[in-house]
Amino acid sequence: MTKKKIIIIGGGAAGFFCAANLDETQFDVIILEQNSDVLQKVKISGGGRCNVSHACFDPKELVQFYPRGNKELLSVFHKFQPGDTMEWFEKRNVSLKIENDNRIFPESNSSQTVIDTLVDEISHKNFQIHSKSVVLEIAQKENQYLITTSTNSYLADFVIYTTGSSPKSLKMIQNLGHKIVEPVPSLFTFNIKNETLKDLMGTSFPHAEVAIPQLKMDESGPMLITHWGLSGPAILKLSAWKARELANLKYQFEIVVNFLGIDLESAGETFKNFRQEHPKKTVGSSKIFDISTRFWHRILWLSKVDLDKNISNISGQELLKILQNLCENKMKVNGKSTYKDEFVTAGGIDLKEIDFKTMKSKLLPHFYIAGEVLNIDAVTGGFNFQACWSEAWLIAQDLNSQPF
Image 1 (cartoon, rainbow, N blue to C red):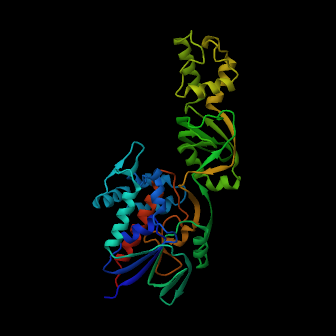
Image 2 (cartoon, rainbow, N blue to C red):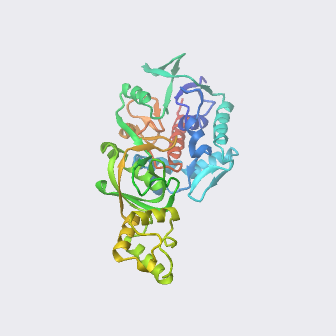
Image 3 (cartoon, rainbow, N blue to C red):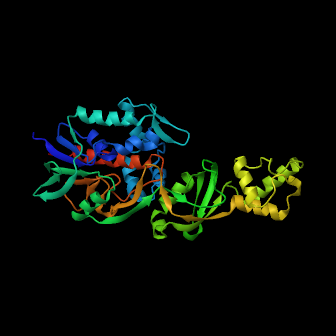
C-alpha cells in the first residue's frame, strides 16, 4: 500500500501532537517549521517548566476558561480532555504533577522533557522535521496540495495547518478562502500610573477584585503590582474575556480595584474590631488586613492619616477614606503590556468554517486546522495547550480511520 503524504505546516504544540498520534504505517509525514527551533512556545511556557494542561476534568467546567471557542470545544473535550493528556504523557514516561493552583507540569520542572518526548515520538515513526522552511504558497492541484517553501516544494494528499496566529499565516489561509476574525492581543497587564502603586513593584494581593464599570465586567483572584501597573490572574482574566472590547477602547479605561476582596462594610467591621482589641496601638503599626506594611503605609499616606496617630483617634471620615482607597480604588488604565513571552491573541480563522468533530476545514478538502490560528483562546494556566492537544488528537483519529 502506498502511503499517503501529509504536510503539517507549523512545528508547535498542535502540529507535533498531531504527528505523534498519526499512524506511520499509513502516512508519510513532514512537519514544516519556519524557525530554526521547533516547539518554541512549549519551551518558554510556564517560565521554562511547560504548563502542559490544567487539572479540570469536566468538559463543561473546562470550556468556561475559554473566552472564545467555548461552545465549539465542548464536543472536542468530551473526546480528549486533560485526563487524557496526562495519560498520554505518562504512558511515554513523562511524570506529571498537579500544583496547588491546578496547573499541570512535568515532575522534571523542565519543558525540555515535553519537547524531547514529542520529538522522539516523531523520530520513532520516521516522520521528518524540516526547520527553516518558510511556506510561501499553498495551491490546490487536483486532489492534492502543492506547498512551496523558500527552499523546496511538496505535494500533499492532506494538509494540517497549525501555524499559530502570525499575520502571514492568517493571510495565507485567507487567500485560500477562509474568513479571518481580526486578531487582537489577549492576556496582557494594565499600564497604570497611580500614586497607590508607585514604587511598590512585586507587592501581591491574594484575593483582589477588579471591575471595569464601562464594560460591566469584574474578575477576582491574585493580583500583582508590576513596574508598569497591575498584573496577575485577576487582571489577565479581564484582558482575555474583554480582549476585543478593550482593543476598541484603545486600552484607555477606568477600573475599580478592591485590594482586599471584601466589601467596604466588612472591611470597616474588621477595622473596628481590631481597634477595640488594640486601642493603644498607632495606626501605622497595626496589622489589620492581609496586605504588606509598605502598602498599608501607602494607603494611610493617600488617606492623609498620620502613621503615628493612635488607632482610637481615627475619625469616621478618615476611616471611610482608608476603606475607599482599599476597597473602591479608582484608577485610569493607559495602555497594555503583553504578558511575558506567552503571547496569546484573540482572533483567527472564523470557527463557523471548521467541523469540530474532525477539525476539518468546511471549505477546503483534505485540509485540517488546529491551534492558535483558530479564533480560540483561553486564560493563562495550561488551557491554550490543552486546546492544541485535543484538536490535534481529533485530527489524528480522523486520518487514522480513513478507509484508503
